[in-house]
Image (cartoon, rainbow, N blue to C red; front, side):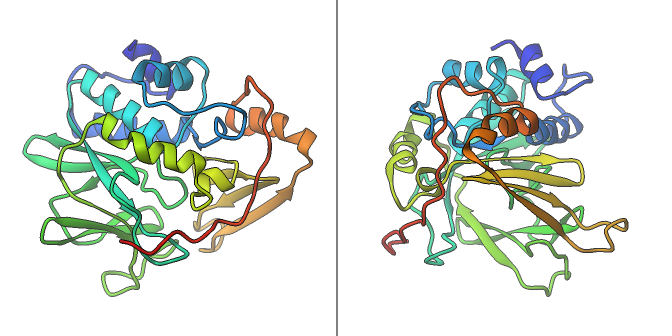
Length: 283
């Protein structure tokens, strides 16, 4: 890994010689603003393999993005190169169809231990994701812009929750995003679920060609044959979420990907927006 090249790819400018909370927060947010959460390899004749040098080439040299196994494993590698004490963890995402959790290794996330405190990092989740690391040492609300998150704990299991695009305080309605433990994992532990998400009709990544990236004050997303632009609530927007959707023709999509995400695919994309088959209720 060429660390400086990676930092340039994510638009980070500043000192990076000493691990600090400020540095961790900065590279986390820069990553989300620069590296899309996307599954376009799956829909352009390729296959995702969990090989860090190959992922580095894809994201840094080819200026692509990836899904959680790609973006978060690569971010883990960057953090270790910057001197952080980082650990890969296994998450289980709550399914919006069944309201049940996915299997172990459904999601890859990263924990950083820094000056006696623990921080949750995730640059590979998409629209519901948090923009700066969350503390694992507090169970109260953690406000990020117009959103609020919390990490709830029951025995050894931690639950990441949010109030969607609202913040109604500690007594508001909390929605679970995923659950996880702090047991250290290795990248090869996720190989089976990485293959599952590329081949199962119960996975969003198999059923839908998608790409999304955080923007200052909002988010832009491509799904199937749609481009969705979201503006987060602010004083300028009167406190409400604003969303616009543009329908796309197939021949428009390559230019849309290049213009909005900086992505130029090496093979033709086959747009896909199929209905997700509910998975078996196991967890």
